[in-house]
Figure 1 (cartoon, helix red, strand yellow):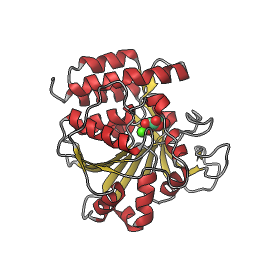
Figure 2: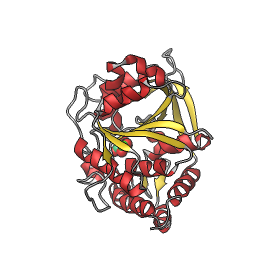
Figure 3: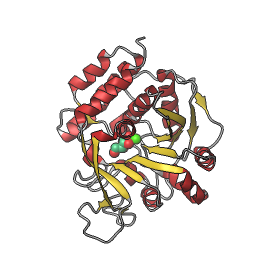
Figure 4: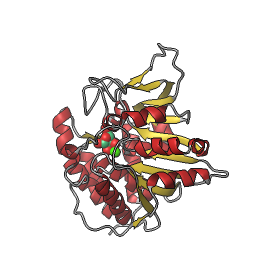
Length: 316
Ligand code: BDR
Ligand code: CA
């Protein structure tokens, strides 16, 4: 099987961190050209450090992390320490990372990579506010030709919002950036809260991760133990939703997900509903479809894939 060339843009966050560990375990399937970071769950210096720490835990000293935009296009940065803790990845010990920090700005790295595409276009896997990608598309519109697909976590329809009554966090942090990306014309698959709220990290699943015995398995379980406290209390659920890893799982096993092509438009004006994703699921407008909206996930299949991925790391 040809490896799929990807760039991962993220704001770790425990769920981003676990998505990175899953992606980095798939050395036969995924060719990670670089990891780019953006301000979101915590400030940029922390999301960048956290991404580098995941490379260390995964033993991937071949991967370079590039720091990107430190604030949204037009709005003040909103962060989510309440959910993720002060470090963004509370639950594991924080040490100075060894992984390579790229000299280039993430936006320039993304532009260079996409301009350099000759035969195999690149899949962009987006797990945070869309500031870096929107900036790259605006700076060099031609790079859109180098994009195979965007697979992103963001938005909500049936589930309502998780940061405001009507908005999901990644979209609310930078609605102007999201609006640009959804209007960009590139193929987009969206994991919104309707999908990610189906993959709950129950105690049984966390214990199964811990039992894998590898450092990434233990780190994933420890981060999830912390991350669960806030979300389980908030939703009264049996475990926190594991949002961002859905993007990577989709690349590896798309048959675990069911989606529908429809139009998604972002509210950028209203004070009350800014960041809301208006998903025309029943095609009641003539707005043209611009996304594959994922609505159903095989949660057991998703967790089997995660266990299988994190079990590929040697026990240590
Ligand atoms: C999204 O917001 C962040 O807190 C998570 O990392 C995820 O990307 C879920 O709304
Ligand atoms: Ca994220």
